[in-house]
Image 1 (cartoon, one colour):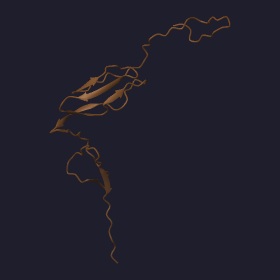
Image 2 (image 1 turned 120 degrees about the horizontal axis):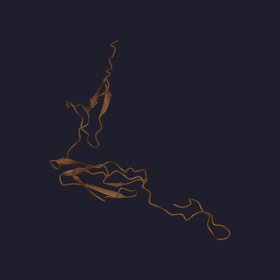
Image 3 (image 1 turned 180 degrees about the vertical axis):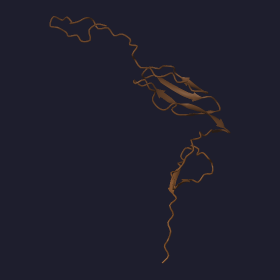
Length: 136
């Protein structure tokens, strides 16, 4: 409450009424994100609050390990997710089937119906156009 703007006058008195700062409910809060099969350190949801994510044994964390609540009500980084380990290796996510446009083929050639998302591996398409030599 009080005056938003006050001026000190020549007589040493302030114009307006005393300014009082009040807590505003309009401050944006970040969503309370829970990670299945994981745990979270920190529970704040206001600007500057930090959360640190980790996974239970047998699970691997993907996404950001640390996230900070930003002034716009969003968390920094990417949403964390705990995926189960299979045989000591984190399970791969399966992407939707990758298809090349007509006249192109998948490299590396795959007989599988889906292309797995593997770190560092890219799937590309090459042209299937063949060149023919004219015999003279």
